[in-house]
Image 1: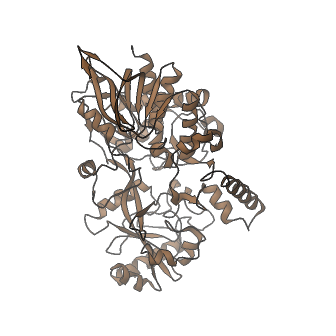
Image 2 (image 1 turned 135 degrees about the horizontal axis):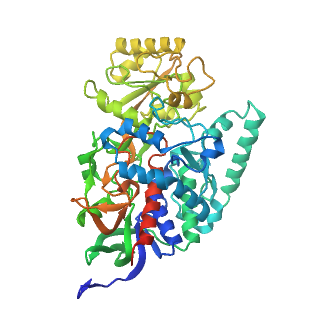
Image 3 (image 1 turned 90 degrees about the horizontal axis):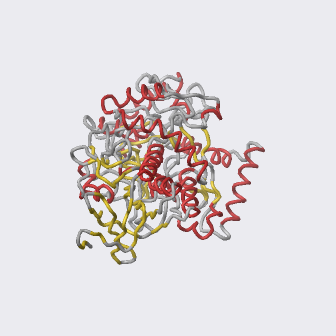
Length: 569
């Protein structure tokens, strides 16, 4: 490779991006629109990374869509809110860069690419009681996307998780679910339900799944369409093996493509955006509590490649976080062939009235309607005094029919397969349920009795379920007096175990406000950038609101692209 100090490359571009999620694609598009030649290296057969299977929410304070819903925001409020959550872990330089460039990123995407965002008029930050929190506007969503415009490249887009698809291939959001379940109840629901059903079944004539893309899949689809239109080179099934250093800067990457080692030069620099390390057993053991029992929802290919590459050339990992992953409680079902289905309990069941969570002692340990991240933090804390890994979610028959429970969809009446698979534990009485769970029956019965009393009064003096705007936002507004509190009274009763899991890792590479990777002395490594989950979370592993992973990922990808455009070749 080396000859007289001169690197010989098989291919050369201005920018090499490793990873095709939101952060990597934002860097690639920003650099490309500045006139640079860009190649994206993707390890798997699909473009989209974790973004494609995510909820797609993007947290951008002061974004241009605030005005669409009559709201305003300012730096002072945001920093006040984040400082209350992060304390001395708040990196002022990174937060300021995020707040300055986030709105610019949104404007750039909407002016220069196919990415379009929509405002959320009401979407409370996860800690709405803290000064500076917002009840809406900061979180924006990608507009639905017609996958048919991708043509044959539709097959390049990473599909969403099957567990979140209806009828084996139709994407649905909360509005769609409500409409489908309520089709007999109103003309509007019937019309909406029939429209999306007709579209889906028409799609299945020609496509392996529905082409009406929503949430993170819509964002990944729009980024893919934009990259194709911009003539960005996309290499799939290509693994980055080593960074190439020449003349004291990162000058390219050695990749394995089609079984061959290929040296790719980068005139301006390399961007690491390979999705963090949720599938790397060694790194999980180092950074993640209960690593042997932990269940990640991230793609299995996210094995810390980007972080490893940076460490090999002197990069440093920042481990000073509140937590090293973005937590989520996860239930699992073991198929007959031995494979495991995982389901993250994010926003569809825990917040609804008529569900409680207990530890192995049969006692509550958390506000069940809190954010998924804080729910797992509570699991970790509770386990210090009583076994809480796994924790247990409990409900009754009316609840599971109305709201579902994990893999059990709302309205599903045939529950026997889930019981026989061991996913659901079913019992005719609370005492019997306690026996099957190995919990003291008297303790669990008392816990349920108290919860039913709280449901009648509408007040939860123990943990405050339903007391915050965020709780109520995800509860059932039709249920009174508290949209998050309901009785557990009608047999049969059901339980499901949930394990600590994640939707991505938070610990990552130290970077500066220009997204440049820093070495162990805090100095930038020339030619090396990081964003997405390869970059240490600017929230230091806290989770202040919906979209605090994708918002910074897109923004620091944009920052990296801008900086690369200013870098001398």
